[in-house]
Structures are given as structure tokens and as C-alpha cells.
Amino acid sequence: MVTVVQNETNERRFCWEQVLRTNRLFRISQVFAPADRAGQLLPLYALFAAVEEVCSEHSDEDVARRKLGWWRSECAQLGVRGSDHPILRELEHSGARQVLRPESLERLFGDAEARLDPTPVPDLDDFQARCRQVSQPQIELELSLWGSSPSTPTPVEAIAATNGLAQLLREAARRADPHKYWWLPLSLLAHHGLSRAEINRDQRSAPARALFTDLIDSCRDWLPQQRLAQSAEPMPEAARHLFVMGHLQVHALRRVRSGDPVQLTRELNRVGLAQLFQAWQAARMISRP
Image (cartoon, rainbow, N blue to C red; front, side, top):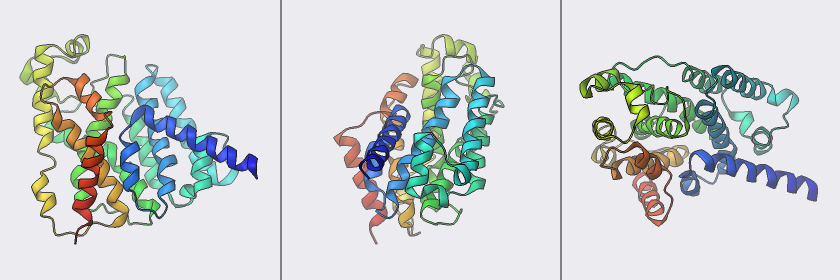
């Protein structure tokens, strides 16, 4: 019994280390998850983090595809033969694997694979849709932990694009290849007279900062706080953690006015009392009658 408990502790520790390498805000947001099945969130977010790392830390596309293929195969066979990987073992031990929708898992891996050899994004509207596409499988998988339907509550749908943008920024911060900012809209690049190669050479130059300032200013309109505060639609309990996480990411992006992508990523990783208070405010916003 002691050995089993120790192994489970080690698995959860491994999951925490995996999550905090990519999304440090989870340390705060998970506190506000509903108690029912909340323990299943950790291995699920560890899986998200592992997939995110594959997309951001492997410049060799073939290697990255093989790694994604391994994760896809292991998840598909987990209920049949188990796995030696700590994240997948914890998914099984926690009961999360049994309720995750296979079609949503496939979309998670499919979209990650598409980001390895991505199609250019024409304009800001397409960029918003692409950000939603990044986050939608994760939203579906999290809601499935509580047996919720695949339909996304309106308040969570409003922050889906922001969640996707935060992930793209995190991925770009860790990538060293020329395609790190593949998602910058072509219309915005043309407006500022910049190429992706120029931004990769100096992402903190004045022209690059002007471009990122325009981009983030446009993205701030994706989540009008007043509209959410006045929404009459009740928030399902299962969506509380999603909303809190999105709220934290929105605030992080709003704090940066300089258009500096390095500072944007730094804010997305900032964890402190201010972020804890913001999370508490978000939880209150959706818990009131």
C-alpha cells in the first residue's frame, strides 16, 4: 500500500512539474475548480502541457510528429493496456480517462499537428477563429470531466479565443525556429511593412512592438467585461475553472501596453497575490445569483 501511494504521489508531482513549465497560472486557477472530480484536472492539464511542448520545443517537424503520434496512440490504447508514462497513469488512476471524449482528444492532437506545418493566417478575423480552434478541444475535454455536453457556455466561449492566443504566445516564446510567429495575420504584417523573418530577428524592435500593440489592442475587444457581467445566462459549475483561467489570461494581456512579446509572455507566467485576487473576483462574478 505504501508503494502504491508513493507512486501516485510521484505521478502527481510529475504532472505538476509538467504543467508549471508551460502554464503557471494553473497553480492559482485550480484552487477554484469545483470539488467534484477536481483532482482530474491536474493530469488533463499536464497532457495539454505535454502537447504544447511538442509544438514549441522541437524544430524538427518529423520528430515532433512522431512524438504527437506517440501521445495519440498511448491515449487511444490507455484503457486497454495502460501506460508507463506518469501523466497517462494519473489520467487512468484519477478516472479522467474514462470520461474524456475520444473525438475531443483527436481534435487536440489534430490541431497540434496542424500547428507544426501551419497555414498562414490572412487577417484578424481569421486569427480570432484560429485562436478559438487551438483552445476548443481543451475546453471540450475539461467540460467532459463533469459530464457536461460538448456545447460551450456563452461566458466560456467568449474567452476561448483569448485562451488560444495565450497558448500561441507561450509556444512562440519557447520556439527558436523561423516559424515561431507563423500565426501573425498577413494583413497586419503588410500594414506595418514587416516580414516574419524581420520580427524573428528582432521581436523587440520598435516596428515589431507597434505590430504587437495593434494585435493585442484588437484582441482586447474579444472579451468585453461589461457584456459578461450583464450576461443573464447561468454558469454551469463545471465551467468555473475555465472561466477563472480565461479571466487571468485576459488580465495578463491587458496589463501590457508596450507591445513587447517578451513582456506579454512574462505576464502570462506571473503568479502572485494580485492574480489570486483576480481569480477570486472571477469566481464571484459567475457564482452570484
